[in-house]
Length: 440
Image (cartoon, rainbow, N blue to C red; front, side):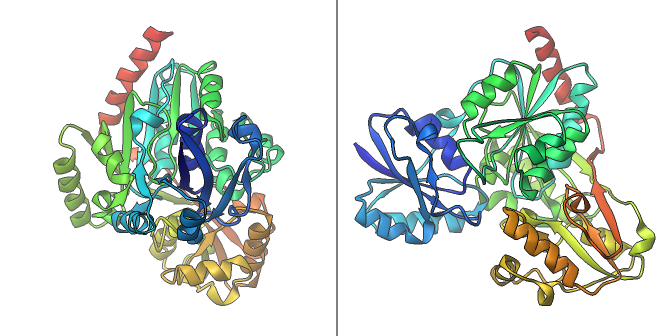
């Protein structure tokens, strides 16, 4: 029996365990490790999910302890199972594993993608923050307009009680508070719910799939970071970002998404330099010449522009986009600069865990990442906002933070949606709609 560690970030790692290792008589998973997400290490993947071969559950250890774990627990194999790392970072991990004496393994689609009974459309990306969320909303709308019942299944974000979160169904905004969602979860679920789309998420994606397909004509896989889908797609839509041209070939598993894509969406063409758009298009057409390429705008809308025009503003952007996504700005920054605002540096006002975030990501000098993986981080975020002396606060997160906390300063919202420049995306979805009707 081979002794295994799974390197993860509370998502892909649990899925890979469930579908590959949970029932395997040839492997014993000794531990998960944790990265990217705070406050995960030191917990346990519970026995209720791990199965009868793991009556005490499986410990979740810090990734920094990898070499010690390999030696002390006599590990044979280390499985990499999280997303949005550069190729160099992945191979540094591989080097650490091999130097410590174990094998380094990547699991592929045949081993990890579950097959649905209804058509599946996936929306994934080559980097975090490329525009998956507005694209998923647009795809859901296009399919619904064709008379289909669309159910969204979101990439996992299980940061609470894992056993209780095995299968989660969201049909109304009240479900977000009932299931104790973090800001990161609400950012992804709330926009779908406001449009009347049911969302599933959780930990056990075999059970989630069977529940979702019972009420769907089409399942829309709404990906996380640059991870691969957990379900085998009938149509793979992949986002690339002209603000990060070149990253489409330099990150894992984002490049794998690019090479698998049926449709490649180059978004943000209204805010990126034309030279970057042209270079990116040349790159993706060379990498995947059989894919359809869709150019799309993602225009930003400001609900109260008079509050920030020419003023000193605090801009709050989506947290993961700024942290492991590698961006130094987002839609809020673009809107504020277009209106001639001056961005206030939030770092001197930061408290608690946010101080550590700014230390880890020194490029973040004029934006505040909306970190909210737990109650303590939400309190730190609220206090940091309160500490900033500014004329107005620009909330550019997918979830309206004003619903979650009191912000004393005048506040405006920045939102953004996908506007494809042509009909290619609609045409690709029409083929899926026809298949769904035949299936129905």
